[in-house]
Length: 449
Image (cartoon, rainbow, N blue to C red; front, side, top):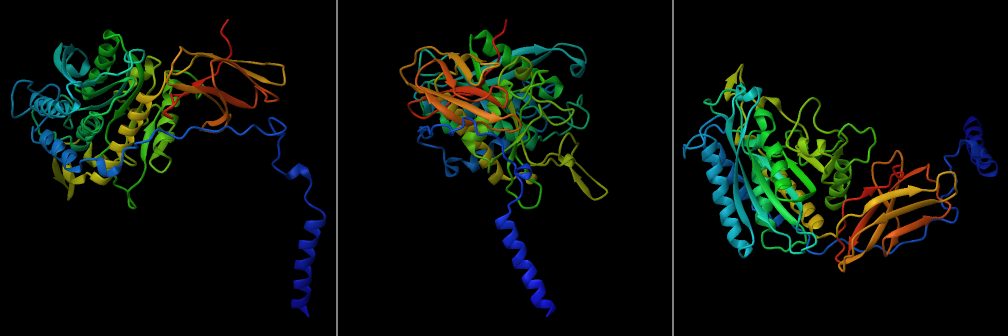
């Protein structure tokens, strides 16, 4: 009898819920914007020819790192002239690898050694020599060839004492891994033709005060380039946590701005969209807490720059002298690297560079009007470009990390988003090429008075 009563009560509860639904007060429902729903836009697919994992040369990644480690120490304060030990030994290996890759580019890629001096606390407040090595693949479009997309890793290393220039400092992960990624990106992209210029950088002086990154920024400015985007790879060779492979972390932040639409953040969103959420974990911070990397000078200059770093770091293998202490191995040694993980990071960087360098120039002067009106009005400008299909109008909830496409516009000017409030969403614009490549988004702002 009791069982029948429970069954009856159960079915009665279902019947009541169907006949008397919960009040609208308890439903998560907002007015539709626009009321009839946004018009469906036919989107161009991404560019063909996506770089495959199998294209990455794992043996080359491993050999590059082994060559760097064999130099003993790569402290920026060590010898630049000894061919067998010190940072000059590492530079020679990098130059040799870039030169071999340049031969596959049909004579288009140029390898440069950029020599400079730096002074700081970690140089003993004395000027010391530094060198960066670049492989530059010029853009094929005269209108975009002065826009440069950069991938960089630092080839210097350090012992526990950052001023120790003699102890072994293998630096397999920090940052032999990022150096190997930059070189492998050059190999993967050397034969291609891209509208913008690609610069594959390996820099020194990172551990002494980000000197190589600062000099890299000076160099591209001196050469008259506009920075389209900068990818910094620093500590990208290991995946220590159980259950690997995990996503690579992608750090992005602002230069003191409180909003979440800085150029760095927009680059991060573009990279995630290109490479996929299964590969990229966006971290909305400039860098790891209290730490820094070579993307920092670019971000501080208001330029789009981000940092790739492995999922969880093991600090026994960073900034440590090689030793065994209480049964624990310390030191940044090659045996802790995960080359399957590094392969994915190489593809993530190379594919992002490929698609961004194929895209039209980003729109400029993107503004939003329509305050105290029922409709948002987005205005923007862009130079004429025969290879551009048009523009995508982007929007997102103010609490959402990612853009979605609202509509497509064929030409620059103004578009009115009928019955879409200026208050409930953020808006942006990006250019779309006929090849499907998309520029970095540019957030819409109120016109400046």
